[in-house]
Image 1 (tube, one colour):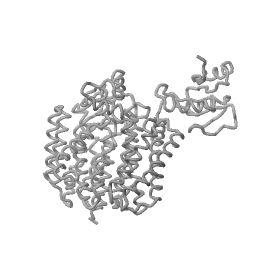
Image 2 (tube, helix red, strand yellow):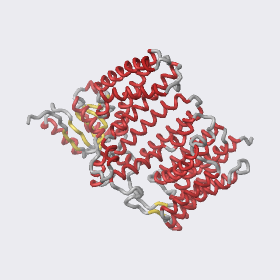
Image 3 (spheres, helix red, strand yellow):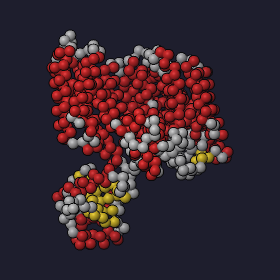
Length: 599
């Protein structure tokens, strides 16, 4: 009856219920005490909102942990460290502490964790694990704090991370960490009920600093109990769990440096803000970040329970590349004022960099090549290890072979100008180029291994499988970038919805352009065409709903307020009757042309 799993479920539900009850009470208390945050230019909310939600999260968590101590043993010093961070955040909410005082509190609390034996990497990193632990805990604590920039984002991501850590802990038999994780998830989920858009309360620093610290501890705790697992997952696990906070903090820091902004200043330039700036609703932006965090979390559960480390590199490489694409895409969304965007644009191309910034200038000028080569190295390595697994070769027999594969293939892609091509316009000619250069590289590798590695038996089909995997992976990566970019843009929600008149080449061109354009901010929702036989067919994901005679009905059906004519065959005088009908329904009629003109 009192099995550990049953108790964990019980206490987690109690934490959830306790949080659902205490959060409304904190909202009332905040309004009475004046703990309300007014709208500010550098913040996202638009109306006065209650603060101090961290009180509900902390007391829901700590009270249930205290109640569960009858069955589970907890270290009081660790609980003290949790409390130090909560109190620090609470004081900051009430009196606004200087950053140095918050940092000192974080250092003290981190020292307690190290004193109790929680060190990043366990014994793998040796002494270097101690400074990395300080950087890890302080970094994640502040990353969760920075992530608290949109309704429900920090609380939701924290809930997902806690649930994933709890699941891994249960699989590994660490019931103490599992209990702490699920109880924290319950407390945060109960608060999220009132914090999700539109938020009735914010957690404040008392909540975000507390959550960030506890999550960084839980990641160290679950890592500590994975001693029998591969070294790869021990090192990857904490980073994979915190991918959204790390991505957000990295993106904000780099873009503020490039644009000339101070790093510590607040602003609407986080991942969530950039998603909204490109057209997603607040809820869609937050849910998308939830989905990415959940995908990484499920992957960590799979890897931590899967003892064969051969697949670690391929799986993590794919997710890492996809997440990097996501970050690169968001980095191009304009969220600063015109002068800052101009500075960022020039610096991103290696221009207008301050004196002494030669290294930064070189990095920015060659960022496409750096990212391309880095991604290719990951895929080449992953393909090699998968091939070794399939063919039964001992991949650790000679690391020089893998290094040779990377060297020859990167050089072949460089000679084929692969790193000078823009991925957003990837085409079949690029497919041919990659295929030929990759095939030549594989033939050369076959010859070189026969000459250089006479003591290792590598059959010809090893090179064939490796070629097919690496070619597919590298080309798919470039296609994925284009697909990911265009798919994400389709989720934008604009008030101007467009029906395109003309389902020919010009109409298809227009629909593609509108999906990726930031200038017009029109969303194509339907086609109409003179050819009745094309009705109900789909072009570029958009259905042809009718003919010009049905244009008003189609606009009503698709909730469109603009019709754009995309055909050079339709004369303006023939559109007058349509124009009058549309004007009566407050629908605009525009014309799109793309034609060659003599100069």
